[in-house]
Length: 227
Image (cartoon, rainbow, N blue to C red):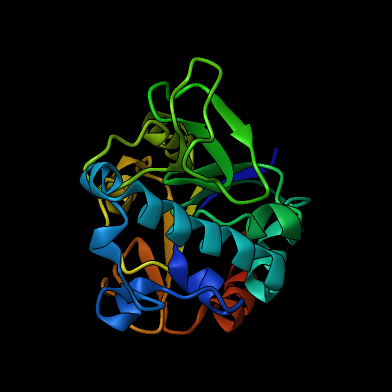
């Protein structure tokens, strides 16, 4: 029987594909203060600015490709039951071939009704003011903003509860509740953490790989070959 490998990914894995990370730029994301475009209050105050910001993020997806870290994760599926739990809103894991991907913080290529969370659909172009759902509410990005609940968290915990191996890659573990997921692994689970500046140190149940995502994933594969 295949072992369950649960992988929590963050912005660092997509950064190597050219997607900017706001935490590395003092809270700025390509000139935008992230705190002006990532909360329900921002949406209420200036929906046009918020839509423009995410329209640009969505357009950027057409210009980037999955990197070696994404591809290595997908290539682990024949040997492990791989579940990717990602904090990223891009679709690079799916495009690399991963078949079980749970997005904690939403997806850029989806939109939803501003009044009904379950009214979601795929959307490739821009969202404009005046684009409405079937019941007349403004459409918004399918993104979990600061201060909003994380509806996928219960499913993420259930997946983590079954992990034999739990890998963290590309995240500084500063955003909760995602950062606390490792607390829900079973006692036998082996933990791995890939980050050039890890916020956790090696311990009995944790192996730290101090490297960026692409080369760190290569090291991870070597470590688990005989597991």
